[in-house]
Length: 158
View 1 (cartoon, rainbow, N blue to C red):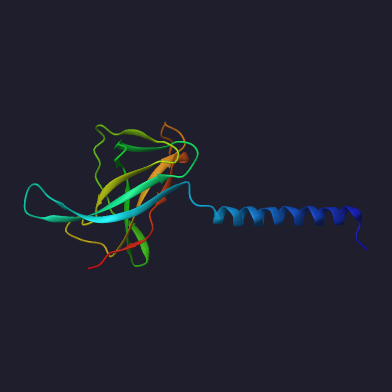
View 2 (spheres, rainbow, N blue to C red; view 1 turned 60 degrees about the vertical axis):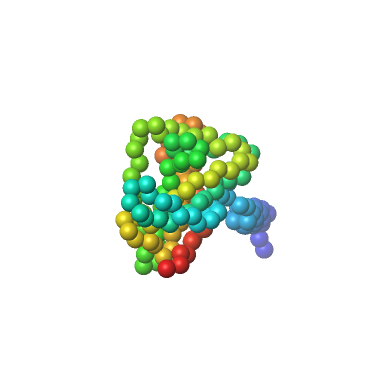
């Protein structure tokens, strides 16, 4: 027969595991704090030359009850990460940013911004891509508090 002490420990572990499972399921069901979503594709005309470039317009929505911060030149020109899918792995597509004029931008609670991303880069158009924005709850940049929020996987037509 089990002692009271063993029974109490067993009960405490059962409650703790149940609470962990419920919390885990709840966090998976909750939407992300910041949502990056494709709005539409647009063509941008280069001023030098005669080329039209495929661009994608994205929205960043802050779904939290507090402001979040990201790095950019303005609210409509954030520094973003661009990745394409190659051999079932996400690969970074480097974008060069000039540090002049770059600063932390405040995205208020329950607001959205839109920005445009060049899809064709170096004459190539990826088949599958995504875009990410790194945000944090603090104005001052600290790598350990930044979290990158990614758009959905976007399949492009040839």
